[in-house]
Amino acid sequence: MTGAQIIVLATPVFLLLIALEFAVGLARGRNTYRLNDSLNSIGLGVMSQVTGVFGKLLRIGVYTLVFEHVAIGRLPADALWVWVFALLFYDFCYYWLHRAGHRVALLWAAHAVHHQSEDYNLGTALRQTSSGFVLGWLFYLPMALAGVPPLVFGTVALIDLLYQYWVHTQQIGKLGWFDRWFCSPSNHRVHHAVNDRYLDKNYGGILILWDRIFGSFEEEDDSVPIVYGTRAPLRSWNPLWANLQVYRDLALDAWRARSWADKLRVWIKPPGWRPADVARRWPRPAFDLAAMQRYDPALSRSAAWAAAALFIAVLGATSVFLWVAHTLSLPQQALGVAGIVALLCLIGTLTRPRAAALSSVQAAA
Image (tube, rainbow, N blue to C red; front, side, top):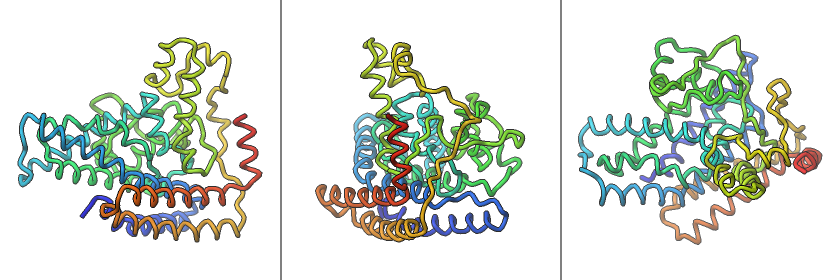
């Protein structure tokens, strides 16, 4: 069974848990869902999975190539200790990929997609980038060099990913000793914050121990309410723009920079860094937490029903596509991906009234 097929089987569980969290939030008077944001977040997860059909070929292909020709040895895939070792090793590599994704602008351009939602719920967990595969595989090559078999690598990668789903919720509070060792809802809420105190903290996937060891841990403080999102808000429900926004901004700064060194630094410096001459000629407003306003354009009842119905159809089409993707030719895969992405863009248009679209265009200009 392929990884994509496992995701298809897990999808009903994801959606059931989202429904449960929604019901709990309503019962507690603490609903954390909005239809427009939820469709956008889950839609970006759909887009990530269907485009990942191409990315997995690169990730697993390069890993297998290194494992077969460069590995210093080969660990037995039938030994339990190898699986435990591989899971810990993967989580360690993920920590550094995740940390780099917040400290290197080019990597942030991919990872920012996951942080763009200004809500925090299980739907946010499904919000994933479609470009992370381009460079993310580099961080896992040490596992191939160490002789971790590709099958073991692929399996522990899926385990690490699935674990992180449940920590994206505001309905579970602090968990005592568990918070000290593992990535938990409390710890991961901090990670998604834009508050100065919380910014760029708690990168761990399964273990929060890595953050404690390498100085990136911050505990959630009930007296400092968390504000979610990014410091350069997306303000759009278009899934293509969600994936391209930060790349576009970096490319513009690189193009405008006069120094060739600065043209390179734009991509490798921390997010938010800009060449002095570019910042002077094209200034951007300083980040102001108090001035942040959640993007929530009004949505008519008819648009909401149309978007929801179309989204259900997209989920069905995506499930079929992912189930049979490995049997399709490259042109057939490309056609399927293009069709699903086009429908997701249509959903984004339905949930973004014309007035909101015009105001965003004017603001960008």
